[in-house]
Image 1 (cartoon, one colour):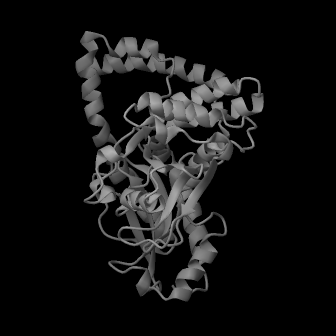
Image 2 (cartoon, one colour; image 1 turned 30 degrees about the vertical axis):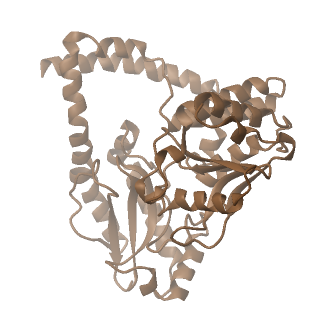
Image 3 (cartoon, one colour; image 1 turned 180 degrees about the horizontal axis):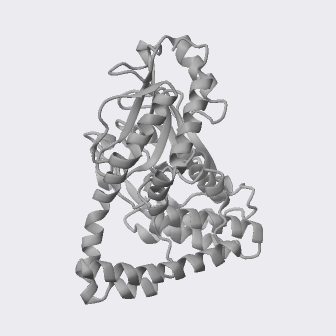
Length: 409
């Protein structure tokens, strides 16, 4: 215990220094990121697919014609030499890019929407873009089948099917189906492949400052998403890496999950329960749980007179990340159990302050939580204790209840 107290005292001193450095960095405007400030950080379609497609488009507003596309093709050829050269010989002057390309009604083996579709009429590149979303049933197989049907017997036509994720992981068996194999797919990562290509784009745009700095802003977004942000923490690391401190460091690390769960279960949830009751809501069930490790942890709140829906919050990723808040179908029911006029009215009312994330969702009508969306960090835990997050819940409870006032939900 004395070792832990000693190391915490040392870390506290260095931590104050780091905070001062971060404050200075903030005041110099070095933390400014327009994509993050507008809430687009993890928006696959409206930020990532649209931004990448714009850079890849020779007719894009960046004015660099085919420079960025050529750099992208060179990156693919260098990183994945197994791709035959002829598949990457796109005619830059005739190339076009489409986002969310509709390829027909979705069935078990066909149809859906391709995130980014690049083609010159003979050569095509299909990019399935994944930031956080899970794989859909036979998703890559459906895109493969579409391109095979377009190719037919034309030997001059070819395509490359790309699976783009933060870390370059492979698509699931659910996405590939029985016939498609992993080696039929090119797996790209934002962390290295896209990051390297974007660095090259910055070099190519050196004489166009607005384009260059916009790409740099996007690069900083990618760095945050891929945990590639390097802070000047050398002094802190020097302390933590000392041999006499290592046991204490790992004891502290091992206690993190228990600490977070204790604060949520024993300090925050009882306060949230009391707040909900003040609003005429009742928390459903016992929510003492392992919040850090459980899948989709959250809580439901029922209100007397509401027959079809409850209020709820939920984290969409393990590790208390990406918190959403909204209305959810009661119990084991789904959208088909809720009268269509009621469902649509709730969507209409609840979308006043924020766009609905998924109009086809069978269980949820939700939006991003207005406060900390990730509770696995020190500031979020402080906000659980100092009343900030409780106040955010109060605002969202009031807003939701007001939005459905007068509706028979």
